[in-house]
Length: 111
Image 1 (spheres, one colour):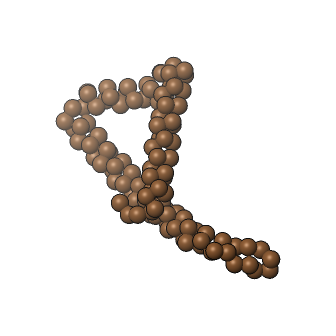
Image 2: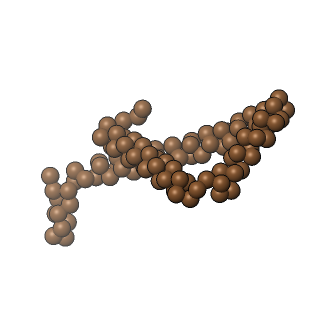
Image 3: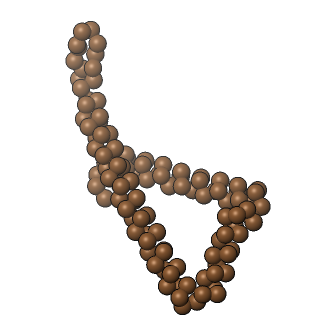
């Protein structure tokens, strides 16, 4: 069904889909804030775990930290690092797109 306003046809059926898109955008925003809070909690937990492991196994923890530092400091060849980052990026994009597609195809229903 269309309505004419000043000679321009406007599809009235588009209005509910605009509301659905806005609702989905709001839900994505809430999910992003939840993700940020969860990441903060995970970082805090990781810090507590590292401190705990440092007290229990100081040499093992220092060796692990040295390995991570070596990797982050450029110990891994550039081509291998680029390959790993590219694959991680592709995986992340694929997961986000499939989640968004599933959300849109489900009609925006809550999980």
